Length: 188
Image (cartoon, one colour):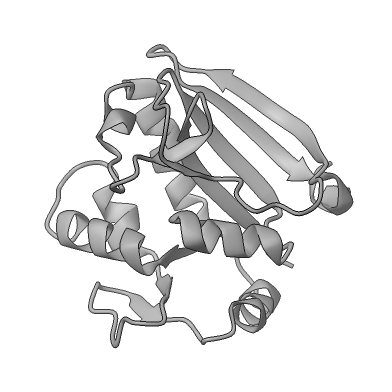
């Protein structure tokens, strides 16, 4: 069974974007090591999932880009979860079924590599509330935003996690890889 990996950049104080959905602060702490790590992670998936806002932000930029992220983002199939988007026009993309849990159960049963979730906040929070995240790849950036949209919002019960790995990149980003304590079957 394939696992769902949630990849998110976040500020030291737990926000994934500013109140106006700004993420420019993320790119101020990128370095070549982090870029190569993310490119490798993108290629390790054979399905990328995202919400509408993330799709809108990524589609316009990456469809014409020649940067290192462009090839995996354009070539690997994408499933977009949205209640308002009528069609997904990005190469190799389609709209997900209206039932997130049902769609992911279907995708996880297919043979292949991991399913990489890019977010945004709404999709990430829905995945977490439904217990559908098998691994968290959290990139903590050396910035405090003070306000914004938190990754862990409206969590009504504790989510015990097991730390699988950490890595510090030259520009100060610290990667934390966690797995929900109830799904240790994926790590050997």
